[in-house]
Length: 122
Length: 110
Figure 1: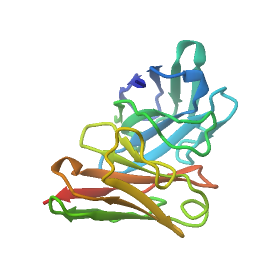
Figure 2: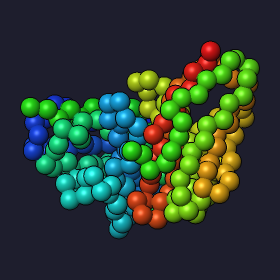
Figure 3: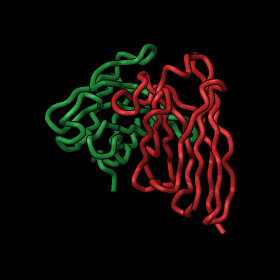
Figure 4: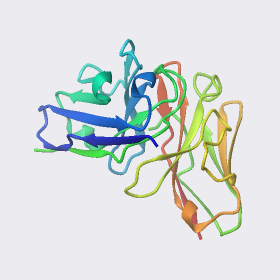
């Protein structure tokens, strides 16, 4: 069965950087697009970023464009999210999720990790 | 404000049926059959319950069903059980985003 385990969250000051990781197992990682979705306190789910199976296509929400970078290492079955210039409003639980397809567009969020909490505060 | 509109809360008694709506536009819900629904219990990861408007993943109870009419998608739960109490989110592929979520609906089983 598919398993996704996020790590790298923590407390960080505004303006600083953080890198999240997601370790995947139980499915053919290099055959699936991957996504990051976040849940901020008191708010609903928000799609953050996605990457195609071969890293050829990436997409970002307007709220993080230019500050966050998604990447993957298919040899290590791992997904990453480099978060720069963090803001208080980036505080959230960050989930990684896989797609049933190779492409970022279309499909759905099939399996989810348990999430990692990122707190941006001075 | 979320791109897709869901009621903030719905409630029902055990055994009853409820429906949660998800309203978007012709650029998302109405334009593509990539509407999916997720169940999230407090402190837990979201779980896929419906994909491609009306398909049910393996292992999800057949009490869950999905449909779409125009720019509005719906999730129905029949024979409510206590374990169904959770927050439900819809999401849809969007030509402009590419993914948009609803604000979530809290289901209370009375």
